[in-house]
Image 1 (tube, rainbow, N blue to C red):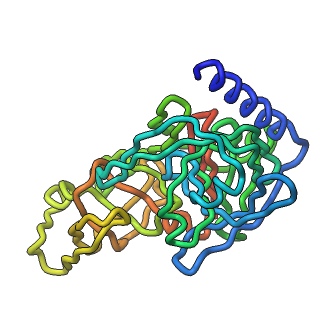
Image 2 (tube, rainbow, N blue to C red; image 1 turned 60 degrees about the vertical axis):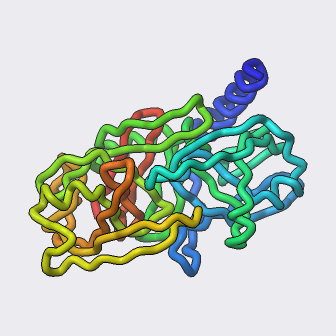
Length: 291
């Protein structure tokens, strides 16, 4: 098993290195589903194309169980992950022959399979793990996914604001990215999650901001998670939300949701509206481009 994984990761690294060496960036469009999810085109070989969710908070790429079977996925073990609410998810792992997004082609790709995607009529989710060797930019002004070259990445560093990030990297299988934010004036280590839209903040920050569930302007609600568990949320506005060290990124009085979860906060795609954000996993940084 260890030998097979080593060969797999070597193939992934080589494919990403070839893509990064291109002379000019590749641009592909992204769209939004009716639920606001970012959708990108992908192919799985033999000219078969799909529209997958681009979800930087997914950890690992996951396909619907039906699609894995259709692609002849081969069992490759099990992976256990945790949602931001702390809910445990046990996923069966499979290798599928290939997966391509833009210029990035991977062979013998390790993916999870989840029948919940079949229920939501979603073919699959592409995680940040797929791009761990290749810097990408999401241009929310022109709705484009851009595959950076060495030269274009250097230009973004010169013209934008670079923020160091940290990762929750589990055995090369799952990858989540965390950036430093300020919730009001309070530091927070936040997951950057393009699979969400708004801003979810750990409930303990309510007290730091002088709020409580009984405060004026705080609205309580409850809902079921995608795994069927009940959760309580508290919606209100906070004075500001910003990338730490980047004053120009600050949002004033943004609407947020507080809830009990395992992260300080989760930053959805709305934060980048009208901007471009570069995920440079090899360089361990985010780059926020000027508007």
